[in-house]
Image (cartoon, rainbow, N blue to C red; front, side):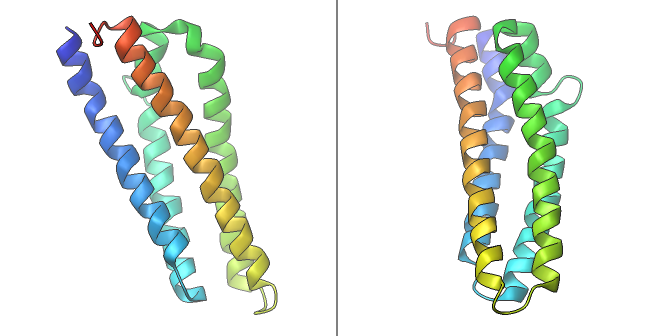
Length: 140
């Protein structure tokens, strides 16, 4: 059973790796046009990623079933999904309308957003790995 559960969570870890790649492209964007395109790509990918995590049978439901002690943290993480998507949309709007002088401030906001998301994803990975090792016996 533990092998089946590990195989089920493999795609979650792969999805998190893809998200880190999108974040790296976002951080490397040099021009306003590149930054806009990367932030838009990020928004699309993150919305899909968050929806999959929260979907019936998804990562969050699996953790709630296998390790209900994480319920409060999962609720906080779901709230963060909403905040991250909202903040991404706001940054995109600012990026499209800001002056060149304001661009530095927007870039700082993008960097802050990516740091928050990396922290968020790290917390999810900790829950996943801890649940697999403790609740599913994969560490045995």
